[in-house]
Length: 317
Image 1 (spheres, one colour):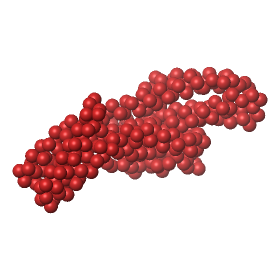
Image 2 (tube, helix red, strand yellow):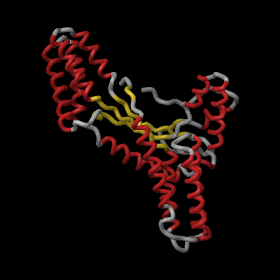
Image 3 (cartoon, rainbow, N blue to C red):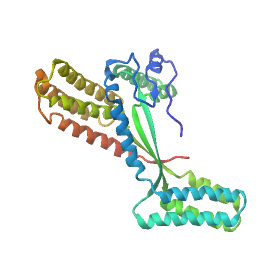
Image 4 (cartoon, one colour):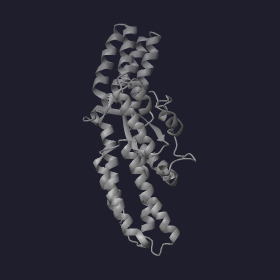
């Protein structure tokens, strides 16, 4: 699978600027010259990394060992076919069928059996204003019919963690293996190999998206919640609380301009942040000020995640 790459085309002067600042990185570090819109990123870098590992762990827990074994035996069958070892190939294919039958018997409603999970991180280092300019430029380019120029910019406009799950489509794969076994029995080794390669191309790859700005906003709110509940905060702590809420708003603005989720929901997020700021202004304190917004963000993120899971497609491994 091709990785998304930072764009390099320089169009209207804007792309040159973005090519420097909107780098796609597999970490959460900020450049020293980063705009104030993204200053909350480093404050929650460790928390975001930890949460990513937890989410990835949940997905890895769905991996089915019998499915992994079935794939391994499929590859073993290919090696046997290359040597024209009929019995070894048939034995391997029988193992594949057996492993898949176990899964189907145990989980009859399961369509796809996960065999692998990988994490891909795309971290956009830029400001909300620069992203808005980039989106505007894309729209202008599309209006002018410059599709590929627009594509070069769009490739870099992503700020997310993708949990990529590869799975075996149980029913079709099982039927396909049985058809391959018939070819092997007839000693049609080349046809059998081609049929297996065709089956491997049908592995289902699901990309589950977790927007980084939303994830960061959640972690910033947790820190803000702790300060909001503290009695007799110092002026420094009051300033820190105000900064955390401001950073939360900035992260949400970044998520909005990048098009994660429904735009109308963001107005409610901003309204809730404004309410929290009123409740905590002047050293006022209390518990539960962030609860509604935290739940709203969690539900919003889950909706995006589940929505991306629904958009499955088969990709060649």
